Length: 232
Image (cartoon, rainbow, N blue to C red; front, side, top):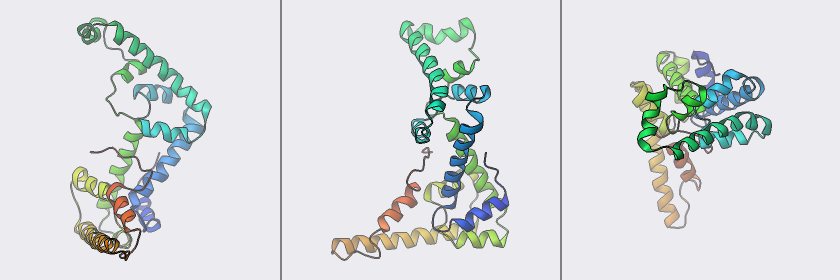
């Protein structure tokens, strides 16, 4: 698990000035999470129970898991998940809708990992939840230590946050420091101007400021390629 404090935030800001530092931190942390899962957790009863309780990974993280090419780990986690989903489907197809709603009251709530997994909300994913925690803790620490000149200088020397993480800062953290707001607004204005020049240049066959500024725009709007993020 990623431990996030002032020094982690400062180091990340210093090392990733050419992209959203929080996106870079999440990507590195996600990779470490998978490494820990494969080499330390996957064979433990506790983790297997957590996996069933969350009804597995979301589709995006399931495919990210497949990229690790560890067939034994996939089998260990997904065979029990297949069995519990099959039982749920069998019961659902064999029951009338009213009986299905009354079953928890008649027999008591199933508190087993598989039972909790059946009640998991759509889109529930233990790695998505972990990433949301990392993002929140990173931004809170960045704001909390905003009085440190080294941290402010490192942030403003880079590109700043992508738009989804800037929205997360404004919405979930609820406080955007003036030095962050100014830097982000300058970034947005500069990007808007560059894209407008590009579109006019492309229409005239010139090419604008840079032929790849549209990639910069897309990455700012959605995060880097390969990022997995729930829409809030």
